[in-house]
Amino acid sequence: MAVILPSRFAVLKVEGDEPDESKTAKKPAKTGSNSDKNSQAAKPKPKKKKKPAEKDGQARAQATGSNIKPTDKSGDKPQDWESWKKRDDQFVSEAYEQDLQQALLLSRLDYEEKKEFYEAHEKEVVQVGPASSSDAKKPKKKKNLLKKDKKTTMSLDEFNHLGEAASSCEVLEAKEHPDSFGASSEKRPPVLSKEDIFDEVAKDAKTILTREQRREDLKNKQPFLVEQVRSLQFQDQLDKKDEVIAGLRTDVERLTAQLQVVKLRNKQLCTILGQGEMQDKAEILRDFEEVTQVKDELTQQVTELHAALEQERSKVRSLQLELKKSGKKEGR
Image 1 (cartoon, rainbow, N blue to C red):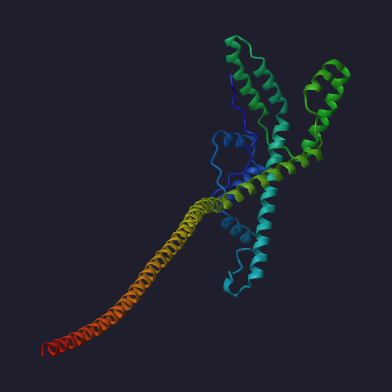
Image 2 (cartoon, rainbow, N blue to C red):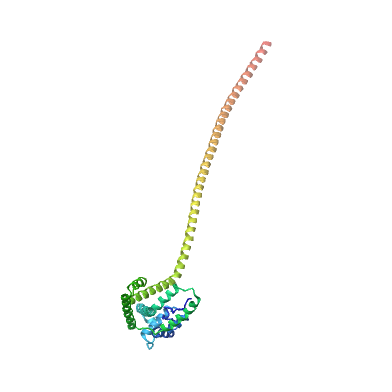
C-alpha cells in the first residue's frame, strides 16, 4: 500500500502576485511547524513567478523605504539609471538566492530528521508481505509514525547535536555488531558533515538559479529565435529566387548570343546577294556596251556601203549617157 509522505519541498515559499502575500509567505517558511508543511504539501498551490518589473519594484521599496518620494526619471542620467538598475537586479538575485538556500536547507534538515523513517518505509515497500491483513495494518502504523515524527523545525544547533549523536550511535553499533554494520554501511551513503551539507545546499541553489536564468533567457530569446527562423526561411526563398533569376539570365544571354549570330549570318547573306546582283548588272552593262559598239560599227559600214552604192549609180548613169550619145552619132 502506498502511503502519502510529506513533500521535501513543502517548506518552499509560494510567491504570489502582490508583495503582501509574499511577505506573509516568508514567515511560515522560517518559523512554521512540520504540520504546516504537511498541510501545504497536501494542498499545493501553483507557483507563480514574479515579473522582473515587480521584483525590481519590491527590491527598490525594501532598499530605499516607503518614505522616499519618487523622483522624476526624466532628470536622471542614463548611466545613473543603468547603475541603479544593476544594483536592484543584484539585490533581488542575492535575496532570492538566500531565500532559496534557506528553503533548501530547511528541506534538507527535514529530510535528515526523518531519514530513518524514509529508509524504513523504502524497506517496507521493497519487502511487502502477501497477507492482506498486514497490508491493511501498515498504513495505520505508518500514520502513527508520521504523527510521532511531526515535530517543530530543528535549529542548526539541534541538527549538529543530532549528527553527533547519530555518529556516536553508529560507532557503538559498529563495536557491538561489526558484521551487520559493515553490510549496512556498504548500502548506506556516507554521512555528510555540516560544511558539506552547506556546500551542497549552496551548489543546489546555484544550479537552480542557473536553470531558471537559462529558462528566462530562452523565453526572452524565443521571439528573436522565431524572427531568426523566419528570416532564414525568407533568406532561403530569396536564394532560390536568385538561383532562378540567374538561370533566366543565362538563358537570356544564350539567346542574345544566338540572335547576334543569326543577325550576322543574315548580314553576310545580304552582302552576298548584293554582290551577286552587282555582278549580274555589271555583266549586263558590259554586254550592252559590246552590243552598242557592234551596232555602231555596223551602222558605219552601212553608211560606207550606201555611199559606195551611190557612187556606182552615178558612174552607171554617166556611162549610160555616154552610150546614148555615141549611138545617136552613129545613126547620123
